[in-house]
Image 1 (cartoon, rainbow, N blue to C red):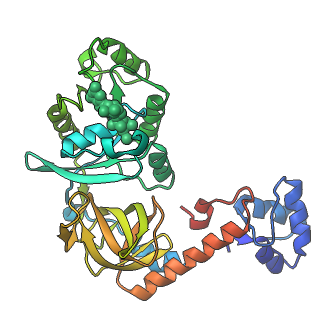
Image 2 (image 1 turned 90 degrees about the vertical axis):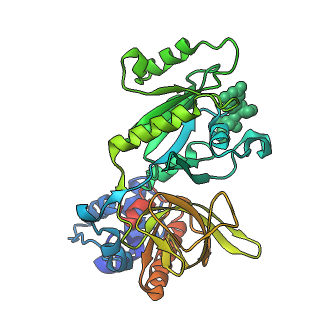
Image 3 (image 1 turned 120 degrees about the vertical axis):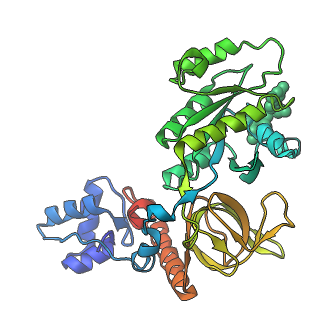
Length: 375
Ligand code: GDP
Ligand code: MG
């Protein structure tokens, strides 16, 4: 069974655990009895001990109960167009939150402590009858983390670059994140209302980083914007919609919902409120849901912008606040809808147990959540 703990290996191979721990130590791995050892280490220990191990894929509860839901491929005929999901990326203070504020016509920036975005915001807007979903994250760490966990929620990155500052270190990082995620980039050249800004200099900076603006003969759309005057925002939305049409994002609304948790917390009097985004299928009130080691039955769904607005069901690319989880799922965790609440509980409990093992193993090298969940 893979991965196994030192104790399990010792019992299976009939070798004292101390001997295994010594081999691990020689490899520079400080482990405990409950530490999980990965495939490579398992083979290495087996070779050292001269025992035969057969590496078998562990059939986890998760695989048994979730596999056909998770891995079910949609038939081409079931797919319909879905709204694109846009994430703003860029250097701090270049105007990501202000642009989103202006687009949805509310003012979050001035209420932020120290101008730092504290929460993930996600909304769906409509432009000329076409929907667009936006996600604004507190820094791009959240984006990286989610991508690292395979929970890629973004279709198109809008790279926000302030005209007065130009391309900065975090701009460059944002570019590499978007590239690694293989999402198209649209540039919002922001703060163009400021006097004396040198737009050519910024375009030069973009070109140097491999983003050649279309007006310079490249294939990157650079839209000049101002979150203060609102200039260019219409063009920005149109550009995003054009890119989206080119990519033909699709989903199947006629399957049980799956998606990703953006953030979640316990709220006084309401229980757990989770901000999630449905990526495929349709989520309904009453659905049984599992997300990381949290599970439950969807009690209510609320609009992310208008808290009084409730929904009975939401489709693909829709961010929504939901209640009904037994505890707060982690940001970036995938969620799935199942038929049976008992199955959801079994999966959640198995995952909680695995997480506990990893915690117990006290950060031995080679042990990651990925080896645990084998994806
Ligand atoms: P974020 O860190 O990228 O989310 O940046 P914010 O949206 O918090 O904006 C940082 C600061 O720049 C705030 O004081 C905004 O008012 C200001 N700002 C944002 N966009 C513009 C713009 O287009 N023009 C001008 N002049 N200031 C802007
Ligand atoms: Mg912000």
